[in-house]
Length: 444
Image (cartoon, rainbow, N blue to C red; front, top):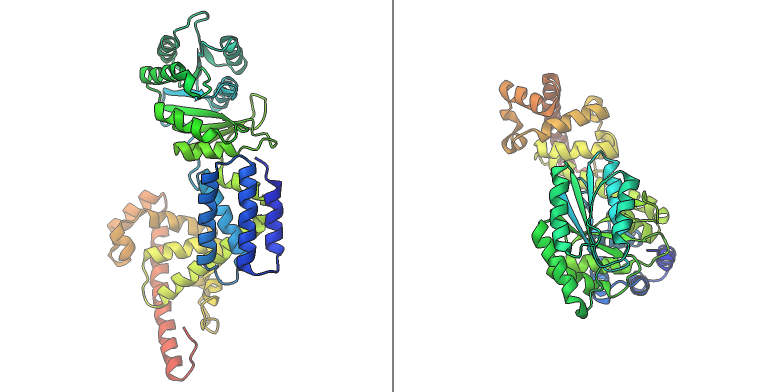
């Protein structure tokens, strides 16, 4: 899915000098035009751009960030959400044997994808079996048998037999007996039109008979607008758990696949990036969204905004500590932030009025390895221990050390850090009060 026009729109928006609202409206129009050109379902485009515009006009960027930079981040996040957001596909089967049933439109590259999937899992140490249950397409049996030989997978098929349901059932049984960890059942391609109810019935009967652990819909990247209705039709008959997009080699428009995601609620699991058996990769929603927007152009922008958001969050947490609300939850967030933002002294400099105070060097600087150990200890604490660290006695310390894979000394150091930080914040609070009385007015 290549949207060169959108990459140009990003550049134009970031360099624009007109009013923010006018630039947002122009970018929204560019985005709508590019997505519709790429065969994304119109309703989906309108819903996506409505969300983007709503956030763009309501949200405020963190201090130090421009509204234009923040808007591009909003576009990136909403596009990522469209593809699955932070939810990256679970490619490792949760148990074995794991039965996968492939369904899809005729010509989508389903049989080739079955071979690619087999290769992908064989490379990761799984015993894979392929079942040739497509009895309608001439040559489907031979193609899958050759692919199984090529990738070193087990194979089951019955040349000449027309009972696809029986082949699927017997194939799954035989491959289970042979110790297959993953069994991939290739079924006949459907056109998805109203005149092929019998093929849809067959698909449903196969699913009922073999009870697959996962039904994967295979979609050609260039399928276009009809993908939404086709995917919805398949999903109503055999609920789809995941999607594989084929032929996404940089030239196809690919928007139809997004429509399929919307129609089924299933995430894209793999993408086929070429003809070779090796050219199948796990789908990464954020990476794909970045590619559409021209990640090379916005990568630095996103990193900078992330750092500013982190700084704002740290400032908020530090203000809470200044008010005496110190517990292990706050320290956990502080430690996480210190890994990105640097020592505590740097964080405290961000809080208005604190730059004049000298911070104890021992409390301000921590090594990365020590931070990692302390984070592991905090993650092993109960809710009560997080909120009231004072209850942690020797018995609890031993449990925390064992549960986090650290030492008693590490736990003692963390608790000492907590005590010292608490004392330091009390001292700063007293100094603030004194300065206010003297008319300092530092606005803290």
